[in-house]
Image 1 (tube, rainbow, N blue to C red):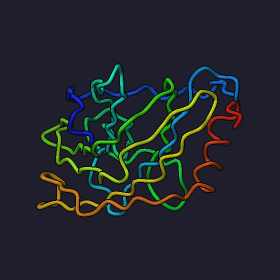
Image 2 (cartoon, rainbow, N blue to C red):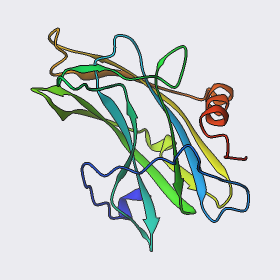
Image 3 (tube, rainbow, N blue to C red):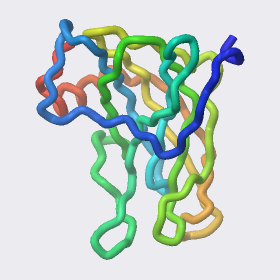
Length: 187
């Protein structure tokens, strides 16, 4: 069914998350998409993006990403863990405002340390049965949690690869974080 759609891939496109003071209610013209992206211990990857595309006039526009960050460079240029949105696992609750319409999740893309730069480690395709989602005006669309595991062929974390991706729906946990992180979002 999706083979008839044209998909253009642009690496590095990222959807901007909403700000802490963002206001949202059932009368909003757009919808919110909520997803948690987490990493099992030990944390090897710097971040993981969930790529999606929006259907526009019968075809899907360029891929964009919902990114969870696990590690970033400090002032010395060394990678270190970033704060987590969750108490029991390292990761981010990613919340973005999107126009209403039909969307497809395509893949997860990992970034890892490589001589001081983030590079693509690996792409993990989203199963066909989990790809489609809809965004409706004034509604929150919950995509669940993508919990990644990774391994590396050396202690520095270079050449890290996905070893597993588990897709679950800890909605109560994620919506509690949503309320705390974005107090002006009403749903």
